[in-house]
Length: 351
Image (cartoon, rainbow, N blue to C red; front, top):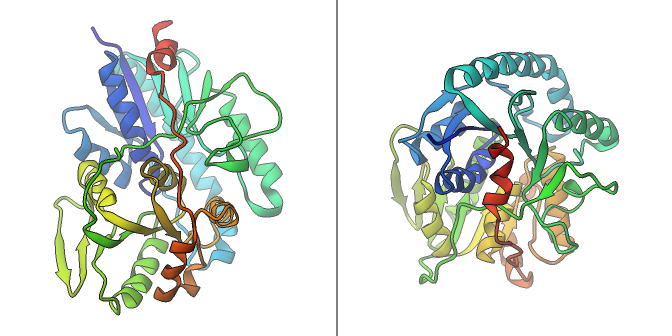
């Protein structure tokens, strides 16, 4: 019988779920039986991608963003007790799942309570350094303490200088627990004719997703360019409509989004790390609007701006005219490596 491997991405926007898609496919290709566990839109998305697999619901961290970026850190701190309670409930549920489904291995993408001392456990993160302003030393220390509970930590990036995550995914002290497995993307590069001048990709927790959607629609409806606007709202059925030169979708599956990315000249999106990995895979040009107050996205936007890869601006300062800057930047370069899945999954063969 194939071994059951539990794969559990964090429900924080769509990025953690989408970057688990190539891992789930690789597990199946290597003779394992993936069982998916998450909550909210992350679980809804993976149910649509893998309707044939068992899916389980985990306790929600239910983290809400502040409407103003300057309050981001303090709102997260205020919600910390609720988050710790969810992690405690998560750990309890994982024990039952391991017993009920005979789990032989665990892959957790940033879910801090999804591990077991009795089952080989992997933690996936691109943030070994967790940026939080003047408290970065503390948030990093606490995060690494959780990571140490796992057998190994997979970082979806390369170890060399030409990497995507910068100081987020690279620490000064060497650590045998950490393995750089190369960027993860569900998208394949294809040679397709350009159909859209601009692809808008939205994702991330509320209320910031909606706030950005409203601002972008107000600006972009002035344009005569052909625009594809994917809102990133996971609903039971896909909906689309065209108003003037803008085609709107509530969501797209991986195959549809892959086609859309390949058929688009440039991309306007958040500077989330999963999106960065997709852009690099396709060697695209992009314009970033980081989520206000989210240090990780603000850092990545500044990093790629300073490297003359992609321009960016604050959410409240976006104007359609700023998109012209894209063509003065060199765009992303593919830094992907061939993943040795059989070697990575060998951890699950030990028991």
